[in-house]
Image (cartoon, rainbow, N blue to C red; front, side, top):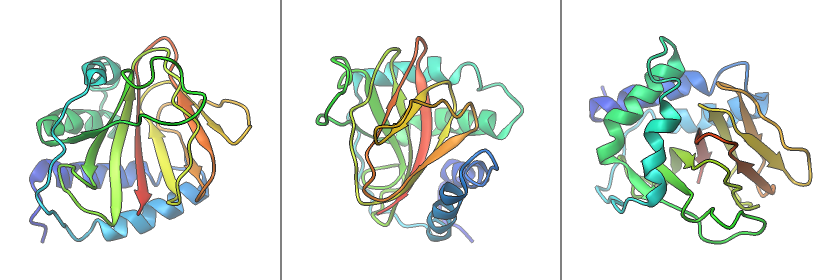
Length: 196
C-alpha cells in the first residue's frame, strides 16, 4: 500500500511502463528496472526546490502535441501538468559546448529526487525541458541514466553523431560517459531516471 500522493504514484507507474519499452536500449531498461524497484517504497523528506526558472514557460508548448494522445506518453504528459505545482526545479550552469542560451533555455523538473515532489536521495525521476534551439552542455556524472523522449530532440554520446530516438524512444548513458542533448525548432521535453 502506497502513501504517496495519487498523482506521483500515477506518474511512477506510467513512467515505469515507458522505461520498459522496446524502443529503449536494453541497458536503459535494465537500469530503469533497478530504479523503479527502489521507487516501490515511497520516501520523502519534505524539502522542495520551488524556484521556477524562465524555461518553465516552454512546458505547455512541449507537451501540447502529445497531451491529448490516448497513449502512455499522453498519460504521462497529463500527469506532469497535474504535478507541476509540486515539482522541484533545477538547472545546470556549467559545462562545455553549451549554446549561449542554454542556462535560461533549460530547466529540470524533479518528480522523485532531491527537492522534488517526492524528495529523496537514492534515485531521481524527472524531466528536462529546453526552449527551441538550445544545445545542452557536454557533461558526465557517475550515475548511469536512461531517457525517454516526449518530443523531437537529439542526443550525443562522447564524440558520436547526434541521434533522435523518436517520441517514446530513448537512450542509456553509462556511468561517467560524456553526453549532451539539443532541441530543434520546437521545445524539447525528455523524461529521465538515474540511480544516485
